[in-house]
Image (spheres, one colour):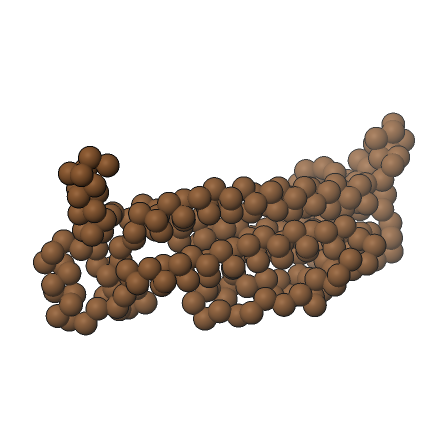
Length: 267
């Protein structure tokens, strides 16, 4: 498989930099490890961002090519508003914003292809995320925990931890992780935190430490995939809003006039 870090997408100043696939390079160093499913997760995330980035740029190109949307000076803005045209502030500049029927229809058709493609990549990412979560959970469990002996031992462990002083309690728990004492760690993590005298924040810290110890690769890739999902969702939402802006724009006076002329001609 081609190293995803070597793929290159040109940077466009008219597309938000957060949508560029290379912004995933940080999580890529964690996910793009040979012989792990993180490689596939990274590939899905990069592909999703590339779709968003390139589609955003293509829409910009198409809109610019129509010559319909352009910045206005003060006099032009006044005249455009007087004639009922759609004037909006774009990057702080009054801009005439209209769309031809062809551009609107092209944007609608493009989004019908792009949306499902992004959804498929997102579904893949979420599937990998769930897999990492299950692997970490399995790594933090003790096989004998649910036996009668295991249940009795776990109860004793929690009682012991609860009887420790506030200063000793978390130190004891973290030391159990460092010692690889999974029976003790599992007893504490697979029960309500107050049973061990901990609050939720302390138990969460213990779980994170334990995950890094007992499942270092899977836990790191779980966190990296979480970040990738957030990045793709943000890019997808931004792209969706951009397409919706075109698709839902009111028709230009010229387009309305053309329709009336065609109606008059019986077309």
